[in-house]
Length: 151
Image (tube, rainbow, N blue to C red; front, side, top):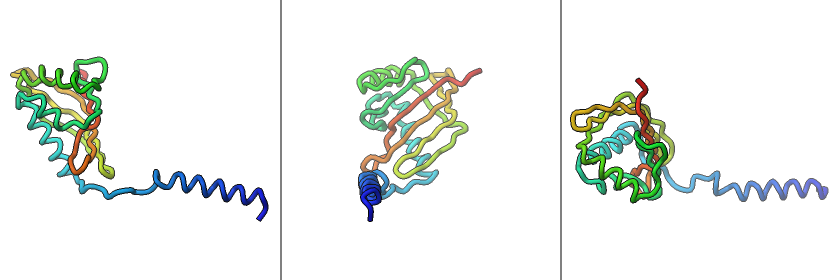
């Protein structure tokens, strides 16, 4: 083999060796179907009207981002997110899922669509995107964005 061919083979092998861990499936995928994704969403939705922001936060992964419908920027500090939910749960919110779709992948799924909030008699329709990831057997929200539905 010539020096040029040897160098190409060596570099190609090094690239494949370095990329191996990124390309390999290093673990098994958690069981996931539409029913399991809906159940994860429904558990979160059931916690929202409970007047307990910590119960709501339990559904979010550490380091998650949350963009509420009434804020210009996403919240990433857990204390700020807790403060937001603390004020929000006082309105006795109830969320109803409208038209939505779920995109599933290994150990994660994205649920997006429309959800309607009942805030003590006032209704607010919002678009949403929620990214869930399986963390040690528990489905947690890693990103959550809510925007008002345009009239």
